[in-house]
Amino acid sequence: MTNPSSDNSAQDAGFKAVLEHLFELRDRLLRIVIAIVAVFILLSPFVQDLYNWLSDPLIRHLPEGEKLIAIGVASPFLIPFKLALMVAFIVTLPYTFYQIWGFIAPGLYQHEKRLVTPLLLSSVGLFYAGMAFAYYLVIPMISKAAVAFAPSNVTPTPDIAAYLDFTVAMFLAFGLSFETPVATILLISMGVVSVETLIKARPYIIVGAFVIAMFLTPPDVVSQVLMAVPIWLLFELGLLLSRVFSKHFSRFQAEKTAYEAQTIANDVPAITATGVVATTAAAGAAAATWEDTQYTYEETVNVQSTDHEEFRPLTEAEMEAELERMDEEFKRLEDKFRKEAEDPSKGE
Image (cartoon, helix red, strand yellow):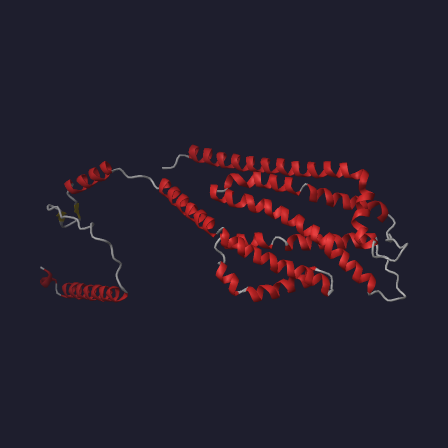
């Protein structure tokens, strides 16, 4: 019978563990927010310089003497601080990932930690590389094309809020697209797809890269090509790295399988040989006796067990034959009992 006190203690322990995890999550989120706020405060005196730096790729291609405009009343004040907040978030991104890693790392296997750590570091670096690619190559080319193809009676003077939204969208699009090698390696390492499958699907992936670029970039061919081609090349890089680290993936999978097998073996309670022998001896020595209102049955001969034979499940044909035999036996007994009920003298 279950002890209520033990159940209550187990529930209290589980509730305490959940609270500890929630407190740890709260503390780590607070550290992330504090880091972002601290960097934002440090950047606050330089918000105007930050926006001048961000708008430089567009200003260089505008007609001489032209500047950006501010449609909103508070835009000249709010937009630079909005940019400073975004920059603070991007600068503290490694620290944010470090706090997330510190929260989830205790629940990972050792081989998973060795796999996730380099992927996490490379993902941050690739995100920064994508943003740099967008700032130094893509945005200047788009700005130059937009100004060059503007009608002669139109003066290109973008709004500062619209330009900020455009650049942030480009940074996110190219930063995420540069994560293609990490996504490829993760899919292959987890066994979702194989290298051979991805090689066969290469034409479809190239087409998919152009489709993704069509949705993530402005409606111009230049930006779409500048995104689709890096996605394709980074996909090829992911395939190359997957081939290089294929032996490591096999070792990680073997270590995971061995660890899970060891965990299952430790969870199964061990049955001692002495206990098995004692139980078998007691069962063989005891005589099974039971009785009803008319007869008494007693097992007087120990029957040798044949459990050492390997268990083999019945086939479908054998199962049907066994069921037919049981039906015939039941019918025979039913006929016998019915005849005895009709003529009791036959039963005696």
